Length: 168
Image 1: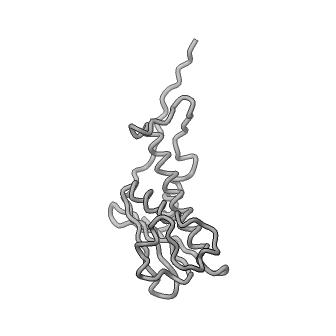
Image 2 (image 1 turned 120 degrees about the vertical axis):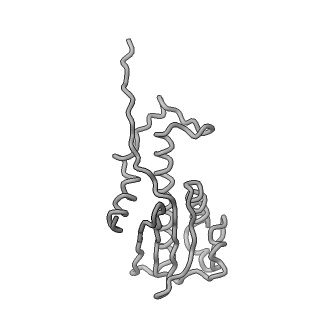
């Protein structure tokens, strides 16, 4: 599978046409028992989309205005690896783990920037809930950060529609 095919597949996870249709009036959430398969698939896709949004938002906040932010994806057996690579100042090595703590901000000057310090903590929680892990490191070729997710390959989401019976 090429990287572009993999990115297309990842994008398809959050495309409305691939997600099961959930009608809250007829299929109320059953959080305690994990919900229906349709609810679980929808929840997984929404969590993964939020992870990508948070990572891209974070990269944009800490990178110069005219710089690149790259998203790279590859597959290693039954794992998918996704990297968000920016051209910002990078992360002090002592903070590689701390940046995933709730409310943690790397530099005092970052207080000028919008945000609560929750985005990366949310990313870690969602990624771990989906069976993966997320780590931070700096680029080797220039300044900038790399946030890498590794998670199991998600089986294709197929929505099975039950026949609708008319009452009356």
